[in-house]
Image (tube, rainbow, N blue to C red; front, side, top):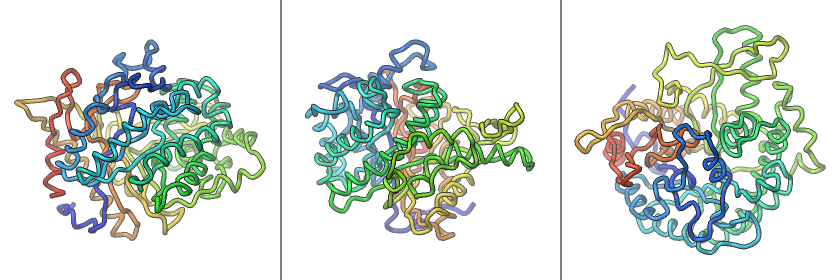
Length: 445
């Protein structure tokens, strides 16, 4: 791999860091905020590995200005953050919590004052608990609820925010939260998963339409985690397993918005989504994105189902013998990022792509006031080389966002895995820039 230089990526390339409301904000019930499904989920018993919650997290709610100054100090020119729906609309609809909107207005102003572009994600998994009690994503009324929420946020921030993402990783919050039950709301229901998936895809379009109606010159996209599929052998049953897993993990959330329908031919269990269609949905679900966010962490290796004939069910395995493994148990495979970009690029060669998340968790510790994390630095260098290769091969990749600015609450894993360029002492809230953050500061200088 030749040495990387910032100039390899072009003068207009966006360099950013990303984080999400529930993972960093804390202040879970402050200033009129309503409970989210993650508040409910973490306050339950036995759901988080270290029995923690996001009640305090990184206290970004009170420390946002210092953290935004850190973004600029590290040399990044953009900060991607998400809006907590129940902080703005405590019961999901109706009464607006002005204090919540004012908080996000202050975050936007802080970004602009520090010379950092605000990139806003409208939904990063923290649905208002009040809406979950009304059926959540499985209730088709969520389309109208979501339109109302997007309109409130766009009216408040659209005069200063131009870069918008409708959702963060629908695959993650639908498959992991509604089918596997490992994330909030913790349901295990194929019916709720299929209904919710269709409604989320319709909300992609509805949210984009609201943004374009209310925000002049809005740059509207969404984000998807893309997991390339591998198999241990090249046999018909292995290929069927890979195709089924690809349908569940990637295509079901990509293709409907491109007007391609659902990939039911690859995974028979997905055919049930058709019962949630209404007349006009085929057109209403289409979106002409300004950009699409590609999020990549690792490949998935598919294996045939243990019961013959059930090839529609995706089964996942890993091959820990041949790859470096992160603290999340994920294999480090940098060329998978190139493969992910190429996969999305094939749908629309003119569509702008942005890597909106990429990063790794490794065991970090403070030694004499420093955090030495050479594995993370090497991870970023190798993955940035794949972005450079994609650009050289003609893919319109216009930005890269590290996950994450700082260590934070890592969902069901609690505070164990550390993804940050900055180390956070969760007892004192002290921030310590890791060596990987220092590397970026030098690289971006």
